[in-house]
Amino acid sequence: MTDPVRRLLLIKPSSLGDIVHTMPTVAALRAHFPHAEVTWLVKRQWAPLVEVICGVDQVCAVETGLTGWLGRVLELRAARFDLVVDLQGLLRSGAMAWVTGCGRRIGFANAREGSPLFYTQRVEVPDAPMHAVDRYLLVAEALGAERPAQPLFEFIDRPEDRQSVEAILTRAGVVSSLPWIAINASARWETKRWPPQHFAEAADQLSQAHALPIVFIGGAAERPESLAVMALMRTKAVDLTGQTPVGLLPSLLRQAAVLITNDSGPMHIAAAVGTPVVALFGPTDPTRTGPYGRGHLVLSHAVECSPCFRRDCFRAVTLECLTAVRPEQVIRAVQQQLNRSPRQGSL
Image (spheres, rainbow, N blue to C red):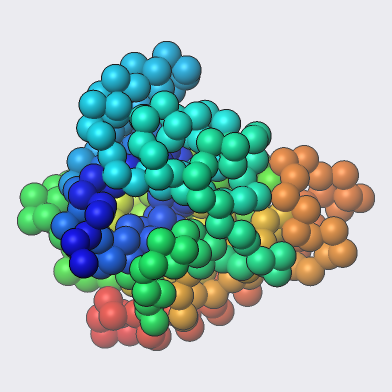
């Protein structure tokens, strides 16, 4: 039977973690529609990351705001897609699927803001909590793709990216061939952020115990959180916050021996490239959005209201779900991860 899908549009404009969660679905769809040209519609700020995802042929970058989206309509209509997959599930993404003129549009039946009205096929989602990776794969299965025994996360390992990362690390005084510990001290929500003094205490003790460089990473907007931690540290750390473009994060995090992080986008990239993760979780649910795959460690403190998915906290002990996680717990978890890290060196 002739493959009917020659041009496929995937709509997943954001966020960083959600884009990583989508990667196994792209891999499954490519396997099922091997002759299809896959275009990914994404917000421009994340386009450099999508450009290094295996299986993506074209990247359609949209500017933020309605004008940015509308500016892509004529181009998308001209592409004459055979299939549009909307994994964002919001009014804007559903409407964009419809305005492409494609006659076959698929998304989740429980998507928000009325977006299912724009789909020709709606995928039911079980009531039980499931990880975003597995939820997105339901769409691939609904299209006839085989569910992978091991979901595939595959970034293009470009030599120029490896060279850029090595140059960045060398300038910062980090020997790329030796192990180092990455820390991401920020997160989009304030309620997701482990206290700076806890990060500082854990970083100091790990630096002293293992003589490993402590390297802070993240986007330029996250530099205040990194600086707040480093200001409290007694030992010297390396600040790469804002110095590595998002497209270089896979190559950078491949080099790390372990990542200590809040619930954040870099956490998902590290897990995708096989770097051991120690993640701090509070108001969000690791069952749904934790680091995917085996071997990663999630630390949180159980309280009756967690996960609340709130950006504010009204408990008597503010953010107890996070603040009650002690630096000693993180240190033990990192030591456990260093023992299994492929970049542990002589530890």
